[in-house]
Length: 302
Image (cartoon, rainbow, N blue to C red; front, side, top):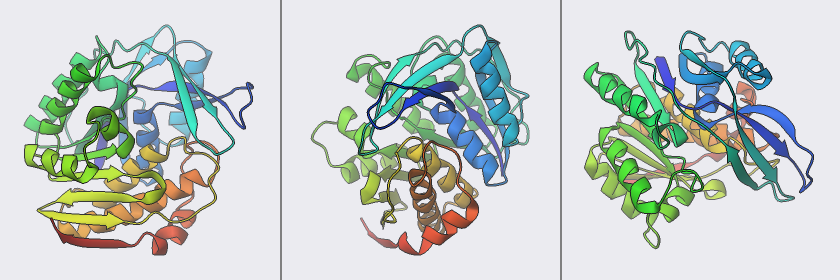
């Protein structure tokens, strides 16, 4: 498949073990998905803003390393930065220095799937261009994939964020969302109940990730539950993005019940392999395949 990923790229300044010593690594949810898809040997273009500063050079080198096409990179003066402080358990907390003024209109010819989400769909003024691209992709017959990947500190009040999320869910074919995001958007509601409601809005597949508890997917009136392989966690940075890349890679545009279950297994194994090593760097294919037997799925009617 040919993918167009649209969204923010930034530099993660990461400290580990509860220290205050930070190391710069490429980041941003859409960037991680683009690189993950390219690592799975897909043709990938990435529409984003990249700074003309030193950090921008780091991002360009990273995209080039994994073969992500540089044709849709818009220049900006300053690269956005996310600070990620990882505690002794591997959990991350974030702070951002972020701007998003993307105004591009990439060519959608030959694109099989457009993926977007996170801050790019929620932060003005660049969000308007992303919403226009979603509509254009739908009109061009491309699959639309969406991951809200909520950052509460940057998306405004809950009601505004929820309205935007539901707007894009209605336009998407495939939605991946974390249980953490759903708890923030819909306090007190069960994740399967929300996923079922979202599926009624139009998406053919809605997958909820549950961290170490695996994932659940709603599709075609069915519920698929997928176990997460047990690993020793180095950190959780990029795990959700790795899941998204694995899911889209394995789906390949085929949204049948069998392919959804297979894709969820592959996505869970991909996310586990990323968690077993520091950072969001795509893991070798052999590591993913070694974890597949533990990513067991069961599918039942809703």
